[in-house]
Length: 405
Image 1 (cartoon, rainbow, N blue to C red):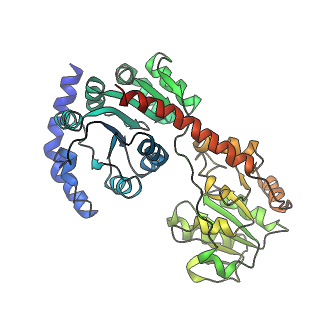
Image 2 (cartoon, helix red, strand yellow):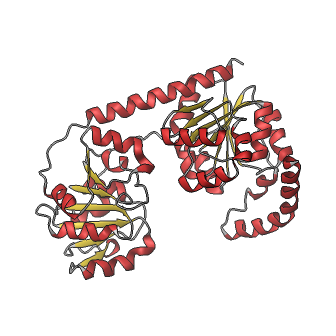
Image 3 (cartoon, rainbow, N blue to C red):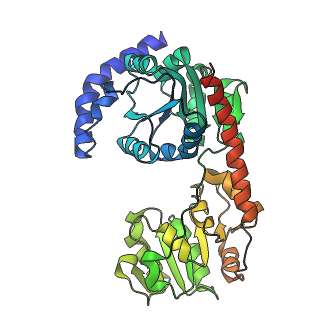
């Protein structure tokens, strides 16, 4: 009954969704492949064996890079197709992963999903993160093998899933294996599913790759100063950063890269209230105490330049941001106590003494005034490589079983 009602609901909203969605896509200049969302997809010649990865958007697509490369290398006979929910995700998949074919998911179009699995000889479907589309899951579990990788459930989503656990329990039961991002996610999935059976804690599959050595680029005008970089900061964190900087004996310039660029003018006021001179990166003024970054795509150059680094989103409830972007340049960082979004790598960084936890102004000041010693990053990068190889090994066993079935 629920399946019938759900299918009727989808059928009712499609006549509205098609024109409205097209106008939105047209405005965003994403109309080129729009009708793929409704099953109008021109697939190439069907391979003998195909695996299908589905991602929501850019972040999930990027997390697949090492996995896709590994499959191509060890199982060249298996072709890979990738579907995404967003147009930007599709473009990213085409540019960075070079799959056999990439397309926009025909969301909850049962006939299209059924056709894709049959025509493309799909042997396994891998859903990345937690894109739980009932019709896709139902059909994929019947006609191929179905896996969830990098499975995660936020606290807010978990509460919603619990309220409708009678629905989500049936959905989760259709996966052959659920590979979760963390032990906490494993417990959440088990709670909803009513069992730990076929739930495996694999960890984050977004493996980090070190960038080629770069110089300070756009920050060359300030490279003769000792820079303290506060990256991806959120409201409230800048006050701690500014107070600590005022007590610094080692850094004479502070560069703040707010997580949200639309906060730049608000941040200018905050800096002035702390009696610092301030300029924007676009102004190229090397005389001011504080520089605020007002453009995207500059973090790696900033980290390459900086003596001391704070990664934001970790002193509040955001859950932190990616610390690897700084650690790849063998720069020690300080982070707040809340790094739940990057728990694995932050825990490893702390164990390898390449990161320091700070909870207040005094502790951040101590970090700034500590002597910058040469830290050996070998154990950290070796541990990352081992972790990557172990996770890839687990997933390759699945692909191996798929190819021989």
